[in-house]
Image (tube, rainbow, N blue to C red; front, side):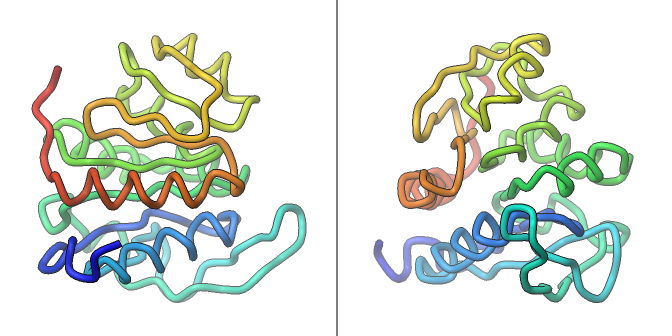
Length: 186
C-alpha cells in the first residue's frame, strides 16, 4: 500500500463496547499506513472494550463522541464487527443518523463481520451486493440486499467482508475505495 494514498483524509471508525478487536485494529493500522488520520467515534467518551471472540481484549481510547462528530468531518467510515458492538449501535439513534449521513452523501463505508447490521437500520442495504458474517444473511436479504459468500465485496463505495480471515482483502479494498472518495448513487 502506498504510504500517502489517503494523505489529508480523516476516517471515522464507529464502535462501542464489544467490538471484535482485530476488526478495529487491523483496519486502523491499514488506514494509518496509507496516510489517513483515523478517529475512533463512539456514543461514549473514554475507552471502549474490545473482544477477542468471546473473551475481553484490549480497550481503545475514543477520540470523539457521536454528539461531537459529524459525517462532514470525515472522508469515510469503518464499521467493525463483534456481535455486541453493532447490536448496541443499532439501538443508538445518533449512531444510525451518523451512518446514514455517510451513505446519503455517497461517502465510502467499510463494514466487516456483524458490522453490516447497523447499515440495515440506516436503510442503506436495499439493492446493494454485500457479504457479512453468515448469520446476517437473512437479515440483509430481508432488508433488500443481495448477499454473497465472498471474502470481500465492493458495491459503489460499500466494502463488506465476512470475518477476521478476510481482513487482508478487506483492508486493501477499503483503502482503495476511501482513496476514490465519494460515490454517486447508482
